[in-house]
Length: 455
Image 1 (cartoon, helix red, strand yellow):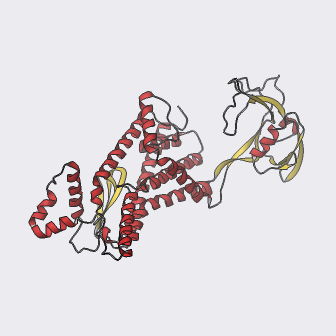
Image 2 (cartoon, helix red, strand yellow):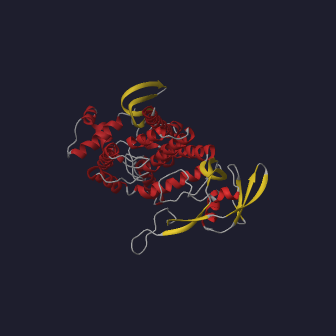
Protein backbone atom coordinates (compact mmCIF):
# COMPACT_ATOMS: atom_id res chain seq x y z
CA UNK A 1 0.00 0.00 0.00
CA UNK A 2 2.87 2.40 0.78
CA UNK A 3 4.29 1.91 -2.72
CA UNK A 4 0.90 2.61 -4.32
CA UNK A 5 0.44 5.71 -2.14
CA UNK A 6 3.94 6.90 -3.07
CA UNK A 7 3.20 6.50 -6.79
CA UNK A 8 -0.11 8.36 -6.36
CA UNK A 9 1.75 11.21 -4.67
CA UNK A 10 4.25 11.43 -7.54
CA UNK A 11 1.45 11.40 -10.13
CA UNK A 12 -0.40 14.14 -8.24
CA UNK A 13 2.72 16.31 -8.28
CA UNK A 14 3.12 15.78 -12.03
CA UNK A 15 -0.53 16.74 -12.55
CA UNK A 16 -0.10 19.73 -10.23
CA UNK A 17 2.96 20.83 -12.20
CA UNK A 18 1.05 20.49 -15.48
CA UNK A 19 -1.79 22.62 -14.07
CA UNK A 20 0.74 25.22 -12.89
CA UNK A 21 2.32 25.35 -16.35
CA UNK A 22 -1.08 25.55 -18.04
CA UNK A 23 -2.06 28.49 -15.84
CA UNK A 24 1.28 30.16 -16.48
CA UNK A 25 0.82 29.97 -20.24
CA UNK A 26 -2.81 31.10 -19.96
CA UNK A 27 -1.46 34.14 -18.16
CA UNK A 28 0.45 34.95 -21.36
CA UNK A 29 -2.28 33.82 -23.78
CA UNK A 30 -5.24 35.83 -22.45
CA UNK A 31 -3.65 39.31 -22.62
CA UNK A 32 -1.88 38.45 -25.90
CA UNK A 33 -5.21 37.69 -27.56
CA UNK A 34 -6.83 40.66 -25.82
CA UNK A 35 -4.20 42.96 -27.33
CA UNK A 36 -4.62 41.37 -30.78
CA UNK A 37 -1.35 39.44 -31.05
CA UNK A 38 -1.52 36.44 -33.38
CA UNK A 39 -0.86 33.29 -31.29
CA UNK A 40 -0.05 30.18 -33.31
CA UNK A 41 0.34 27.61 -30.53
CA UNK A 42 -0.49 27.03 -26.87
CA UNK A 43 1.39 23.95 -25.68
CA UNK A 44 1.81 22.24 -22.33
CA UNK A 45 5.09 20.34 -22.22
CA UNK A 46 7.86 19.73 -24.72
CA UNK A 47 8.77 16.99 -27.17
CA UNK A 48 6.35 14.95 -29.29
CA UNK A 49 2.74 16.14 -29.36
CA UNK A 50 0.33 13.76 -27.60
CA UNK A 51 -2.85 15.66 -28.41
CA UNK A 52 -3.72 18.92 -30.10
CA UNK A 53 -6.74 20.71 -31.49
CA UNK A 54 -6.98 23.94 -33.47
CA UNK A 55 -9.49 26.57 -32.46
CA UNK A 56 -9.44 29.56 -34.74
CA UNK A 57 -5.86 30.53 -35.51
CA UNK A 58 -4.40 28.85 -32.39
CA UNK A 59 -3.42 25.21 -31.95
CA UNK A 60 -3.88 23.96 -28.37
CA UNK A 61 -2.05 20.80 -27.32
CA UNK A 62 -0.24 18.65 -24.79
CA UNK A 63 3.26 17.29 -25.33
CA UNK A 64 5.04 14.28 -23.90
CA UNK A 65 7.46 15.92 -21.42
CA UNK A 66 5.55 17.97 -18.77
CA UNK A 67 8.54 20.11 -17.76
CA UNK A 68 7.39 23.40 -19.22
CA UNK A 69 5.20 24.95 -21.85
CA UNK A 70 4.98 27.81 -24.29
CA UNK A 71 2.82 29.95 -26.52
CA UNK A 72 4.14 31.05 -29.91
CA UNK A 73 3.36 34.72 -30.52
CA UNK A 74 3.96 36.43 -33.85
CA UNK A 75 6.87 38.85 -33.85
CA UNK A 76 8.42 38.20 -30.46
CA UNK A 77 11.48 39.97 -31.94
CA UNK A 78 11.42 42.75 -34.53
CA UNK A 79 13.01 41.93 -37.90
CA UNK A 80 16.47 43.41 -38.27
CA UNK A 81 16.38 46.65 -40.35
CA UNK A 82 19.35 45.43 -42.36
CA UNK A 83 17.60 42.15 -43.04
CA UNK A 84 14.47 43.96 -44.22
CA UNK A 85 16.46 46.27 -46.50
CA UNK A 86 18.38 43.38 -47.99
CA UNK A 87 15.21 41.35 -48.50
CA UNK A 88 13.49 44.24 -50.23
CA UNK A 89 16.55 44.91 -52.42
CA UNK A 90 17.49 41.34 -53.23
CA UNK A 91 14.06 39.70 -53.39
CA UNK A 92 14.66 36.00 -53.66
CA UNK A 93 18.19 36.43 -52.35
CA UNK A 94 16.73 37.66 -49.10
CA UNK A 95 14.60 34.55 -48.85
CA UNK A 96 17.64 32.39 -49.36
CA UNK A 97 19.52 34.40 -46.77
CA UNK A 98 17.04 33.46 -44.06
CA UNK A 99 17.72 29.81 -44.50
CA UNK A 100 21.48 30.04 -44.97
CA UNK A 101 24.31 30.35 -42.48
CA UNK A 102 25.74 33.66 -41.36
CA UNK A 103 29.40 34.42 -41.33
CA UNK A 104 31.17 35.41 -38.14
CA UNK A 105 31.04 32.14 -36.24
CA UNK A 106 28.72 30.15 -34.03
CA UNK A 107 26.95 33.00 -32.21
CA UNK A 108 26.40 34.97 -35.40
CA UNK A 109 24.73 31.91 -36.88
CA UNK A 110 22.53 31.63 -33.79
CA UNK A 111 21.46 35.27 -34.17
CA UNK A 112 20.53 34.75 -37.81
CA UNK A 113 18.66 31.53 -37.06
CA UNK A 114 16.68 33.31 -34.33
CA UNK A 115 15.76 36.07 -36.77
CA UNK A 116 14.79 33.54 -39.42
CA UNK A 117 12.61 31.61 -36.98
CA UNK A 118 11.01 34.86 -35.88
CA UNK A 119 10.40 35.99 -39.46
CA UNK A 120 8.42 32.82 -40.10
CA UNK A 121 5.76 34.14 -37.69
CA UNK A 122 5.38 37.39 -39.65
CA UNK A 123 2.82 37.35 -42.45
CA UNK A 124 4.03 40.59 -43.99
CA UNK A 125 6.10 43.62 -43.19
CA UNK A 126 2.98 45.69 -42.45
CA UNK A 127 1.38 43.09 -40.19
CA UNK A 128 0.27 44.91 -37.00
CA UNK A 129 -0.67 41.77 -35.06
CA UNK A 130 2.83 41.23 -33.75
CA UNK A 131 4.25 41.40 -30.23
CA UNK A 132 7.07 43.85 -30.84
CA UNK A 133 4.72 46.56 -32.19
CA UNK A 134 2.60 46.65 -29.03
CA UNK A 135 2.95 49.55 -26.58
CA UNK A 136 5.49 48.87 -23.87
CA UNK A 137 2.89 48.47 -21.12
CA UNK A 138 1.01 45.83 -23.12
CA UNK A 139 4.20 43.82 -23.71
CA UNK A 140 4.96 43.99 -19.98
CA UNK A 141 1.42 42.86 -19.11
CA UNK A 142 1.68 39.88 -21.47
CA UNK A 143 5.04 38.73 -20.12
CA UNK A 144 4.08 39.43 -16.51
CA UNK A 145 0.85 37.47 -16.93
CA UNK A 146 2.51 34.05 -16.68
CA UNK A 147 4.35 34.55 -13.37
CA UNK A 148 1.34 36.39 -11.96
CA UNK A 149 -0.84 33.35 -12.60
CA UNK A 150 1.62 31.23 -10.59
CA UNK A 151 1.49 33.74 -7.74
CA UNK A 152 -2.32 33.81 -7.78
CA UNK A 153 -2.46 30.00 -7.87
CA UNK A 154 -0.10 29.86 -4.87
CA UNK A 155 -2.28 32.36 -2.99
CA UNK A 156 -5.35 30.20 -3.66
CA UNK A 157 -3.53 27.07 -2.51
CA UNK A 158 -2.27 28.75 0.66
CA UNK A 159 -5.78 30.10 1.33
CA UNK A 160 -7.22 26.58 1.02
CA UNK A 161 -4.46 25.25 3.24
CA UNK A 162 -4.62 27.88 5.99
CA UNK A 163 -8.22 29.13 5.92
CA UNK A 164 -9.98 26.07 4.52
CA UNK A 165 -8.11 23.23 6.26
CA UNK A 166 -6.35 25.20 8.98
CA UNK A 167 -3.07 25.01 10.85
CA UNK A 168 -2.46 21.97 13.02
CA UNK A 169 -2.13 23.44 16.49
CA UNK A 170 -2.14 22.33 20.11
CA UNK A 171 -5.46 23.29 21.69
CA UNK A 172 -6.21 23.94 25.36
CA UNK A 173 -8.22 20.72 25.55
CA UNK A 174 -6.62 17.87 27.51
CA UNK A 175 -6.25 14.77 25.36
CA UNK A 176 -4.73 12.25 27.82
CA UNK A 177 -3.54 12.23 31.42
CA UNK A 178 -0.50 10.13 32.35
CA UNK A 179 -0.79 7.81 35.33
CA UNK A 180 2.80 8.39 36.40
CA UNK A 181 5.98 10.34 35.59
CA UNK A 182 8.52 8.06 33.92
CA UNK A 183 12.15 9.21 34.38
CA UNK A 184 13.71 10.59 31.21
CA UNK A 185 16.78 8.33 31.50
CA UNK A 186 14.82 5.07 31.12
CA UNK A 187 13.59 3.53 27.87
CA UNK A 188 10.36 1.95 29.09
CA UNK A 189 6.93 3.39 28.42
CA UNK A 190 4.97 1.51 31.10
CA UNK A 191 4.60 2.78 34.67
CA UNK A 192 6.50 1.00 37.43
CA UNK A 193 5.66 0.86 41.13
CA UNK A 194 8.56 3.19 41.92
CA UNK A 195 7.37 5.91 39.52
CA UNK A 196 5.66 8.89 41.18
CA UNK A 197 2.03 9.51 40.34
CA UNK A 198 1.43 12.19 37.73
CA UNK A 199 0.49 15.53 39.33
CA UNK A 200 -2.43 15.90 36.90
CA UNK A 201 -4.01 12.71 38.25
CA UNK A 202 -3.62 13.89 41.82
CA UNK A 203 -5.12 17.27 40.89
CA UNK A 204 -8.17 15.64 39.31
CA UNK A 205 -7.57 16.75 35.73
CA UNK A 206 -9.43 14.55 33.24
CA UNK A 207 -9.31 13.98 29.47
CA UNK A 208 -11.64 16.43 27.74
CA UNK A 209 -11.06 19.23 30.23
CA UNK A 210 -10.52 22.64 28.60
CA UNK A 211 -7.86 24.67 30.43
CA UNK A 212 -8.92 28.33 30.73
CA UNK A 213 -6.40 29.66 33.28
CA UNK A 214 -3.19 28.57 35.03
CA UNK A 215 -1.87 30.27 38.17
CA UNK A 216 -4.24 33.20 37.62
CA UNK A 217 -3.20 33.75 33.98
CA UNK A 218 -5.91 33.36 31.27
CA UNK A 219 -4.88 30.73 28.72
CA UNK A 220 -5.56 30.93 24.96
CA UNK A 221 -3.17 28.18 23.80
CA UNK A 222 -1.49 25.15 25.31
CA UNK A 223 2.02 26.58 24.92
CA UNK A 224 1.19 29.29 27.48
CA UNK A 225 -0.12 26.70 29.93
CA UNK A 226 2.95 24.49 29.46
CA UNK A 227 5.30 27.43 29.99
CA UNK A 228 3.71 28.29 33.36
CA UNK A 229 3.69 24.66 34.49
CA UNK A 230 7.34 24.17 33.49
CA UNK A 231 8.31 27.31 35.39
CA UNK A 232 6.61 26.05 38.59
CA UNK A 233 8.39 22.84 39.71
CA UNK A 234 7.24 21.85 43.23
CA UNK A 235 4.93 24.87 43.49
CA UNK A 236 1.19 24.69 44.05
CA UNK A 237 -0.71 26.43 41.27
CA UNK A 238 -4.42 26.70 40.50
CA UNK A 239 -5.62 25.33 37.18
CA UNK A 240 -9.09 26.40 36.02
CA UNK A 241 -10.82 24.01 33.62
CA UNK A 242 -14.18 23.79 31.87
CA UNK A 243 -15.80 20.35 32.14
CA UNK A 244 -19.23 19.63 30.68
CA UNK A 245 -20.19 23.28 30.92
CA UNK A 246 -19.01 23.69 34.52
CA UNK A 247 -15.95 25.51 35.87
CA UNK A 248 -13.55 23.64 38.17
CA UNK A 249 -10.63 25.10 40.14
CA UNK A 250 -8.00 22.40 40.66
CA UNK A 251 -4.76 22.54 42.64
CA UNK A 252 -1.75 21.22 40.72
CA UNK A 253 1.79 20.70 42.00
CA UNK A 254 4.13 20.02 39.05
CA UNK A 255 6.85 17.49 39.82
CA UNK A 256 10.40 18.67 39.27
CA UNK A 257 12.42 16.86 36.62
CA UNK A 258 15.84 17.55 35.11
CA UNK A 259 16.19 17.77 31.34
CA UNK A 260 18.73 19.11 28.79
CA UNK A 261 18.49 22.88 28.40
CA UNK A 262 17.47 24.17 24.96
CA UNK A 263 17.33 27.58 23.31
CA UNK A 264 14.34 29.17 21.53
CA UNK A 265 15.07 27.08 18.41
CA UNK A 266 15.12 23.81 20.33
CA UNK A 267 18.90 23.38 20.14
CA UNK A 268 20.96 22.03 23.06
CA UNK A 269 22.65 24.68 25.18
CA UNK A 270 26.33 23.92 25.80
CA UNK A 271 28.37 25.20 28.72
CA UNK A 272 31.86 26.71 28.65
CA UNK A 273 33.29 23.18 28.92
CA UNK A 274 31.33 22.07 25.85
CA UNK A 275 29.04 19.83 27.87
CA UNK A 276 25.22 19.98 27.53
CA UNK A 277 23.56 22.11 30.18
CA UNK A 278 20.53 20.92 32.17
CA UNK A 279 17.57 22.69 33.71
CA UNK A 280 14.88 21.82 36.26
CA UNK A 281 11.31 22.13 34.98
CA UNK A 282 7.86 21.22 36.22
CA UNK A 283 5.89 18.36 34.67
CA UNK A 284 2.15 17.75 35.09
CA UNK A 285 1.66 14.63 32.97
CA UNK A 286 -0.95 15.86 30.50
CA UNK A 287 -1.09 15.89 26.71
CA UNK A 288 -3.08 18.33 24.63
CA UNK A 289 -5.45 17.70 21.76
CA UNK A 290 -4.15 18.68 18.33
CA UNK A 291 -6.66 20.14 15.90
CA UNK A 292 -6.74 22.14 12.69
CA UNK A 293 -7.42 25.78 13.54
CA UNK A 294 -8.64 27.82 10.58
CA UNK A 295 -6.79 31.07 9.98
CA UNK A 296 -8.21 34.41 8.78
CA UNK A 297 -8.81 34.76 5.05
CA UNK A 298 -5.80 37.06 4.66
CA UNK A 299 -3.45 34.39 6.03
CA UNK A 300 -3.13 32.76 2.59
CA UNK A 301 -1.95 35.89 0.73
CA UNK A 302 0.27 36.79 3.67
CA UNK A 303 1.95 33.38 3.63
CA UNK A 304 2.43 33.58 -0.14
CA UNK A 305 4.11 36.98 -0.04
CA UNK A 306 6.28 35.95 2.91
CA UNK A 307 7.49 32.99 0.89
CA UNK A 308 8.09 35.24 -2.14
CA UNK A 309 10.40 37.30 0.04
CA UNK A 310 12.20 34.22 1.33
CA UNK A 311 12.70 32.74 -2.15
CA UNK A 312 13.77 36.11 -3.57
CA UNK A 313 16.38 36.37 -0.83
CA UNK A 314 18.09 33.16 -1.90
CA UNK A 315 17.49 33.15 -5.67
CA UNK A 316 20.68 35.10 -6.34
CA UNK A 317 22.55 32.37 -4.45
CA UNK A 318 21.16 29.68 -6.75
CA UNK A 319 24.44 28.88 -8.59
CA UNK A 320 26.25 28.52 -5.25
CA UNK A 321 23.44 26.41 -3.80
CA UNK A 322 23.45 24.14 -6.85
CA UNK A 323 27.24 23.83 -6.61
CA UNK A 324 26.98 22.83 -2.93
CA UNK A 325 24.28 20.31 -3.84
CA UNK A 326 26.53 18.87 -6.55
CA UNK A 327 29.34 18.49 -4.00
CA UNK A 328 27.08 16.36 -1.80
CA UNK A 329 26.54 14.02 -4.76
CA UNK A 330 30.29 13.36 -4.89
CA UNK A 331 31.01 13.36 -1.16
CA UNK A 332 27.76 11.82 0.07
CA UNK A 333 27.38 14.68 2.54
CA UNK A 334 24.07 15.79 3.99
CA UNK A 335 22.05 18.11 1.75
CA UNK A 336 20.55 21.38 2.89
CA UNK A 337 16.84 20.58 3.48
CA UNK A 338 16.01 24.15 2.42
CA UNK A 339 18.17 23.99 -0.71
CA UNK A 340 16.97 23.82 -4.33
CA UNK A 341 15.13 20.80 -5.71
CA UNK A 342 14.37 19.54 -9.19
CA UNK A 343 10.96 18.28 -10.26
CA UNK A 344 12.27 14.81 -9.40
CA UNK A 345 12.89 15.94 -5.82
CA UNK A 346 9.50 17.62 -5.59
CA UNK A 347 7.84 14.45 -6.90
CA UNK A 348 9.72 12.35 -4.37
CA UNK A 349 8.62 14.59 -1.49
CA UNK A 350 5.05 14.44 -2.74
CA UNK A 351 5.29 10.66 -2.80
CA UNK A 352 6.59 10.62 0.78
CA UNK A 353 3.74 12.86 1.90
CA UNK A 354 1.19 10.55 0.28
CA UNK A 355 2.80 7.40 1.74
CA UNK A 356 3.27 8.65 5.29
CA UNK A 357 1.27 7.06 8.10
CA UNK A 358 -0.91 10.07 8.85
CA UNK A 359 -4.56 11.11 8.52
CA UNK A 360 -5.62 11.91 4.97
CA UNK A 361 -6.15 15.59 5.86
CA UNK A 362 -2.52 15.85 6.95
CA UNK A 363 -1.39 14.40 3.65
CA UNK A 364 -3.63 16.71 1.63
CA UNK A 365 -2.24 19.68 3.56
CA UNK A 366 1.32 18.54 2.90
CA UNK A 367 0.68 18.20 -0.84
CA UNK A 368 -0.98 21.63 -1.08
CA UNK A 369 1.96 23.19 0.75
CA UNK A 370 4.44 21.60 -1.68
CA UNK A 371 2.49 22.67 -4.76
CA UNK A 372 2.03 26.22 -3.46
CA UNK A 373 5.77 26.48 -2.75
CA UNK A 374 6.54 25.21 -6.26
CA UNK A 375 4.37 27.97 -7.76
CA UNK A 376 6.08 30.61 -5.65
CA UNK A 377 9.42 29.35 -6.97
CA UNK A 378 8.09 29.53 -10.55
CA UNK A 379 6.88 33.09 -9.95
CA UNK A 380 10.19 34.36 -8.58
CA UNK A 381 12.40 32.40 -10.98
CA UNK A 382 10.58 33.59 -14.10
CA UNK A 383 11.04 37.23 -13.06
CA UNK A 384 14.84 36.99 -13.29
CA UNK A 385 15.70 39.66 -15.92
CA UNK A 386 17.48 37.31 -18.29
CA UNK A 387 16.28 35.90 -21.60
CA UNK A 388 14.64 33.49 -22.29
CA UNK A 389 12.81 33.98 -18.96
CA UNK A 390 9.78 36.23 -18.76
CA UNK A 391 11.78 38.75 -16.76
CA UNK A 392 14.20 39.07 -19.67
CA UNK A 393 11.40 39.98 -22.08
CA UNK A 394 10.07 42.48 -19.54
CA UNK A 395 13.52 44.04 -19.25
CA UNK A 396 13.77 44.35 -23.06
CA UNK A 397 10.33 45.99 -23.25
CA UNK A 398 11.19 48.45 -20.49
CA UNK A 399 14.49 49.33 -22.16
CA UNK A 400 12.60 49.93 -25.40
CA UNK A 401 10.23 52.23 -23.53
CA UNK A 402 13.10 54.16 -21.96
CA UNK A 403 14.71 54.70 -25.38
CA UNK A 404 11.43 55.94 -26.85
CA UNK A 405 10.77 58.24 -23.87
CA UNK A 406 14.30 59.64 -24.16
CA UNK A 407 13.85 60.33 -27.90
CA UNK A 408 10.49 61.99 -27.27
CA UNK A 409 11.97 64.14 -24.51
CA UNK A 410 14.62 65.50 -26.87
CA UNK A 411 12.22 65.62 -29.83
CA UNK A 412 14.10 63.08 -31.83
CA UNK A 413 12.62 60.54 -34.25
CA UNK A 414 11.44 57.38 -32.45
CA UNK A 415 14.17 54.73 -32.45
CA UNK A 416 13.58 51.34 -34.05
CA UNK A 417 12.39 48.54 -31.72
CA UNK A 418 15.07 46.89 -29.61
CA UNK A 419 16.52 43.97 -31.58
CA UNK A 420 16.52 41.31 -28.85
CA UNK A 421 17.94 38.73 -31.26
CA UNK A 422 21.32 40.34 -30.56
CA UNK A 423 20.99 38.89 -27.06
CA UNK A 424 20.72 35.34 -28.40
CA UNK A 425 24.33 34.51 -27.38
CA UNK A 426 23.53 35.60 -23.80
CA UNK A 427 20.30 33.62 -23.98
CA UNK A 428 22.26 30.58 -25.12
CA UNK A 429 24.59 30.87 -22.12
CA UNK A 430 21.61 31.22 -19.76
CA UNK A 431 19.89 28.19 -21.28
CA UNK A 432 23.05 26.08 -20.96
CA UNK A 433 23.41 27.20 -17.34
CA UNK A 434 19.77 26.35 -16.56
CA UNK A 435 20.08 22.93 -18.19
CA UNK A 436 23.31 22.24 -16.31
CA UNK A 437 21.87 23.27 -12.96
CA UNK A 438 18.75 21.24 -13.65
CA UNK A 439 20.84 18.17 -14.48
CA UNK A 440 22.85 18.54 -11.26
CA UNK A 441 19.69 18.84 -9.17
CA UNK A 442 18.03 15.87 -10.87
CA UNK A 443 21.15 13.75 -10.28
CA UNK A 444 21.27 14.87 -6.65
CA UNK A 445 17.57 14.10 -6.15
CA UNK A 446 18.20 10.58 -7.44
CA UNK A 447 21.53 9.82 -5.75
CA UNK A 448 21.30 11.89 -2.55
CA UNK A 449 17.67 12.98 -2.15
CA UNK A 450 16.15 15.25 0.46
CA UNK A 451 13.66 13.38 2.62
CA UNK A 452 10.86 14.61 4.85
CA UNK A 453 11.94 12.14 7.50
CA UNK A 454 15.69 12.76 7.39
CA UNK A 455 18.44 10.40 6.26
